[in-house]
Image (cartoon, rainbow, N blue to C red; front, side):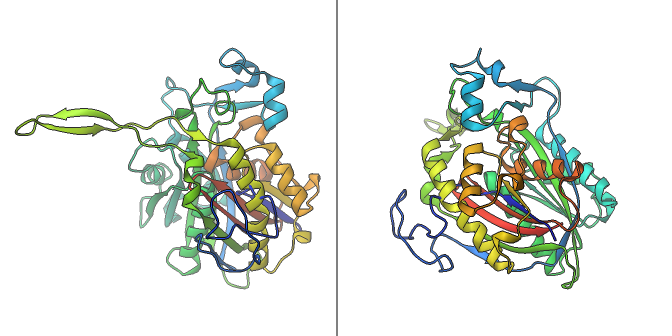
Amino acid sequence: MKVLLVTLASLFASASCLRHPAAPWGTTAPRTRTSTTALGMAGGGRLNCRPLGTGSAAPATIVTNSDLESVVETSDEWIATRTGISQRRILTNDGGVGISNLAAEAAAAALAASGLSGSEVDLVIVATSSPDDLFGDATSVAAAIGATTNCVAFDLTAACSGFLFATVTAGQFLHNGGVKTAVVVGSDALSRWVDWDDRNSCILFGDGAGAIVLQACESGDASGLLGYSMHSDGKGQPQLMCGYQGTDRMVATPGDGTIMSKGAYNFMTMNGKEVYKFATREVPVVLEEALEQAGMTVDQVDWLLLHQANIRIIDTVAKRLKIPTEKILTNLKDYGNTSAASIPLALDEAVRSGQVKKGDVIACAGFGAGLSWGSAIFKM
């Protein structure tokens, strides 16, 4: 049996301790790995659902590190050595293609790989923080793939942890018998919210979408979602966020009128140093938690696939878990950080190339704004 370790949350300094709930942000206090926490931990064992197919999509426009040398003060070597990124795919404003189109393309590809049709889909969840429609993209994605009969669709927002959280959510519906077949999509276009004059952030992000088809299965089925663990800590929200920043708009109500807010958002902001510390500290722990829920150990893992944020984070987590380099799956070099899309996009490439095969076990972990982080163990 092979095991694939897919990591969405990659930011912890020690795999043997978590921050104590009462400790201020940025400090640590030792406690046992399996103790309960006020930070909103949710975990569990096997959910009776199995993966049937994967798909992905990315914009046609490529922006290389060398291209960015004319935009901000940086260099290809500086970006590549510090992040592991060589290029990223970017949605432009002149092609008529939005992130919902990419989400639908990825979902359709996953359906084709599964051998199912849209009419057989009962649930569509789109994990995104940058939808084309402020009210959500999931219903339009469901319509685009033909999931219009007895199908419910909704968005889930958890930034770079979104795909993991959405997959576990779908797994709950499938496990409890509420639905039989689900499509989970991770899609983001954070290039829309990046400050392209900020060399610390504009070099990191790209756009894309990835999807997986899950189907309910019997408890004795060897494949499926074997265990999971999820956390959040709102005290860390200022470290990575995209805050509302409306402008005044006078509305001529009786009297002096009323100053309303015309909706807009600020550029995304990130404290890179703190996010790095958070990821390298928390991810090894949450992966061990999910593996424990699955009744497995790190030694059984064949592949490590982290949320594709930074190659240094990926390498650090692998070393702390003592996972060899040859077990790491990454496409960070070609896509950059695609947020909720990063794990399913990388997984789809690994499946289609034959690197990941049926029977491989996948340990997934993700981290991002919120702050949120989590892990799930799959067997393909």
